[in-house]
Length: 389
Image 1 (tube, rainbow, N blue to C red):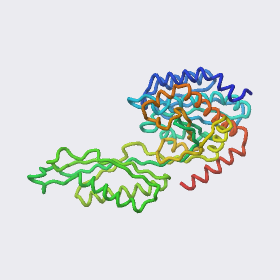
Image 2 (cartoon, rainbow, N blue to C red):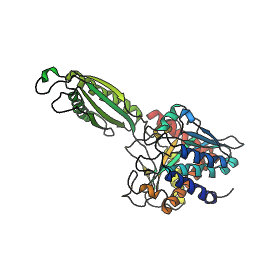
Image 3 (cartoon, rainbow, N blue to C red):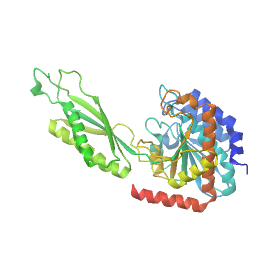
Image 4 (cartoon, rainbow, N blue to C red):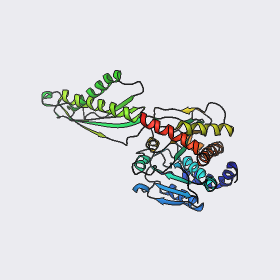
């Protein structure tokens, strides 16, 4: 069997082309039709069976390469949506290239040790999180492990991310002239403002790990009209999905109490997709970090834990998963969603580091295929963490 580096070297021209074509044709969430076709064509060329419209999502896909022998199923996660007005300033064109590179290079290992290699393509990571719908449809349940990495300004291992609940509170009152007949009005904005006051009081009694942040999206029409409608939106985050549920109930009651004390009524809804916490598998992440060091990556590449949220959280509750980070800028001042980051995704520096990251993820996947004890340890951690959520 050829070395990992040899397999990657043979694929570089096609993967470079894939990354650059997706970069040159940025498509927002649920409109990534060209990106899907580009990945489909490349994967089919190398013997993958590709299913489009996975779970009924027009720009989701599943690609599978089956060896003749039974074994674990190694899943590489692909993203490919762009940011409106900023193109691939989050580097999802590279995530697509990375997933395809890893999966194609893994075929020989699957043939030798037994098992399957899959690419799961999910749309709209930047907006409503396609992985959540795919997880609810059971797409990730058959994977033994799910592996991915995200471009950034440095290399880092996979860390945990927060669970997220987006809550919207719409308050309904009664309009009146604020100077001539204020007594006839019921101020919906008061309901929204009292919700902020109640949540600020609630913070004292929550764990330090909780984050609650919100805005008033609609506060009325004019200063001389008692607002008959007001709308507040919040993100509620917690380190685990279980504790998030407790916090959300408390926040909901803040709004309900605010409505009661102001004489308004309140409608509570989700205005975006909710995310589970990312339950990163340390056993897998540590092995990926080990391989990065073997490949010559030095410095601080410990797991990067973040209070942000992502749709990969849903995947991590279905199978052991990691979300690593790799350097494409060499400059801490150039981060994701910033000017200049998109150009780094097609730079020589960025692509070279993407291939180093690919090698580490391929080597980690091969370890899963050939070492049953390693996979057993991965699942022991996975099951223990599921009990703690």
